[in-house]
Image (cartoon, rainbow, N blue to C red; front, side):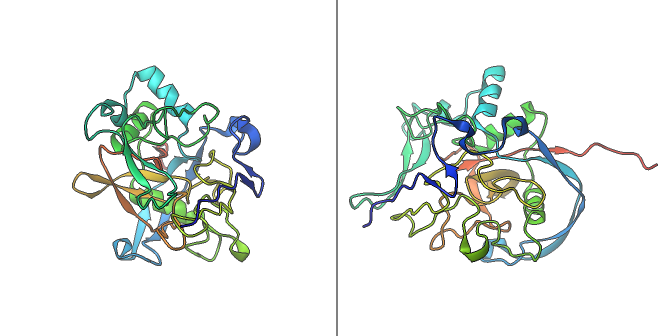
Length: 292
């Protein structure tokens, strides 16, 4: 088995944690929202997996969506103001508690995912880790319930699956290539996904072996960052009993595994569970306007 190759800096996307200005959106743009106009789109366009079907023509009302995933700094402000304790923190002492952490396999290890007690948004790799210097990284180890609590505190809400997919599809380059969000011309990475044979070889051709600060990759056509890759994003749409739909893929999606770095892709996330590759962003309803 090949060892994971951790490439720290390519294409100008610096993964250094000592200087958060090395890449990412400017501090003044943090927390901004993008106006999404009402319109129609094809939900489930160009399905690749059975759960993405059928293709549906839908009308979506206008709304505003945060330009980037909710960051550690934003979530920390919520925790400080509200005294909130996440599901992962509450269950850290339980025998079956904790949160899921991905670690690149080495030395014959065949299971890269582990349930780690003490893995929380404050300690994303587990006990002994922290988020110092990673304030602009997307917050992870948050459950759908945690994300909904933050959204309410911030004066917004979680997007529905339809709203999220509509915003992502509007951002694609003209021509409608459903995989254009992850790769540009000549297969050049333009989003934080996995390059190489998952899970043994991480070439990190996009500049990051794990999560990236928000906004280190070019924005979409309507000005949204990281709608594809980086971390999965929680929506308010049920996937099945006890689970919510997550969208957008993550830095773990590769050509040979989880090719879900497309607007139509969808997966479930348990309502009270969390992981090191799942985050969220919020939306706000468009102001009501009277006809003139």
